[in-house]
Length: 188
Image (cartoon, rainbow, N blue to C red; front, side, top):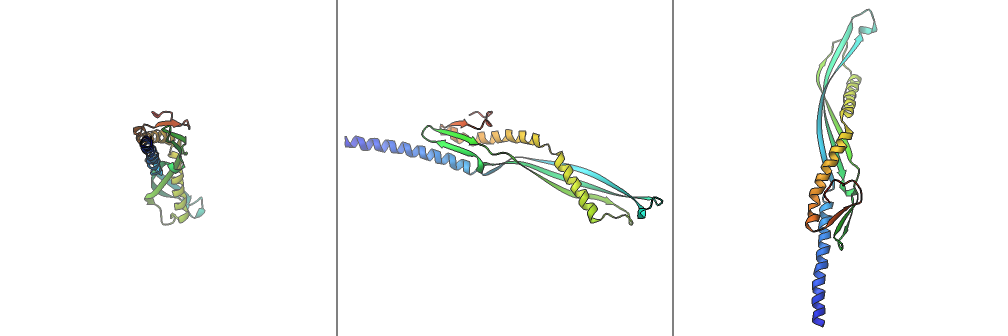
């Protein structure tokens, strides 16, 4: 009877160790992800600005023009901070429960370069003009990024990335439960 007890104890403890190891492997894999950039798009735009002014402020003198062409390159990134993702591992029932997925973070990074500048001796570009033109180009870049479309595309990419990550849980015969309602398109 004593031998049977030790034999049973040995078999059941290994099974429990395996369940603990499975849960640790899954949680460790998810923790490694940290911040995931799921989408990055580049946009570019050329903008011509013309400033006209009266020479010496007199309406009787000819008009002076100055032109500047700016090239704006904009990078838009959508990322998810997966450290904020709330997941529970039920190792006894072999379930991976996703409680919360963080909101997407959109970062828009415009870079403005002056391609061409044409001004006259009497009507030069000053620092204020350049700052205003550069800021206008950056504002235009922010407006040109369709953030709603970026969020939709980013969600699709997040689903694909999470599906690849969840392969490990599926390989260990864990059932994945979505309590967020966000992952409805995933094959859980």
